[in-house]
Length: 315
Ligand code: FO1
Image (cartoon, rainbow, N blue to C red):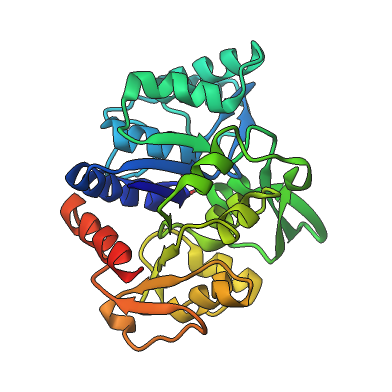
């Protein structure tokens, strides 16, 4: 069996631990199509937060509490950069994490596409699933905000880390999306999939930028595989992160129903055949979508694997 997962960062990484566990149990192959909209150039280095969260988490190198960056990290270089007054100081790059960005930037500068860089890094981390960036092309999520009396676009990371979403926000834009192509292997993986899972990642700034790559959403919706999403919202609140703030920007209700309807039923040109919601949200209805209530707290790999099993039983 072949499973494709559309995923973002921290929530996506945790979910992929369960997908991998389930896949090992049943002998399935897993391909993760990971968001690149969070990526940014910083101190001359290309940082890919979602790919790194997935790589470190599946490779056993992630700091479990933070969810991003490395375990046992040190911040010597960060302090030195701050001593020089090198901006931005609001985005912390750990010393171990820097090696990842140096290797990635060196390979990108040498002309390797991000998908091949990711493959090379997976050789070290052995994530146990195939990791593909949604695209090898530039695609950056920016937030259009009102700041200092004027309206302007800031990089998603500035919105997320520096302002913690606490700034009047008009909309998100996926810069470069219209010229981007699915990374090599993405279309093929989706076409060959027996099921496509939408991880409980942030629907607005993690899943949407994946689906914004021209041809990617179509590959999923027109593909043979049933599509099952997992709600990132339980009882009206995001399990982690700021999906509530992001949904508010779109004017979408922060609920399992709201996100289910945002993705939409495949029958009506949307994405989903199935939608997993938490017991707290039992009874939620999404037109044209089979909804099932199961425990959705990813407390450990077994709990997450049970979610994956429930998703597959649903279709
Ligand atoms: N998040 C923060 O809240 N503060 C940081 O200083 C920070 C640094 C950072 C460095 C590398 C990296 O891969 C991720 C980092 N993140 C940080 C998390 C990042 O903003 C989020 O993981 C995603 O981009 C949003 O899902």
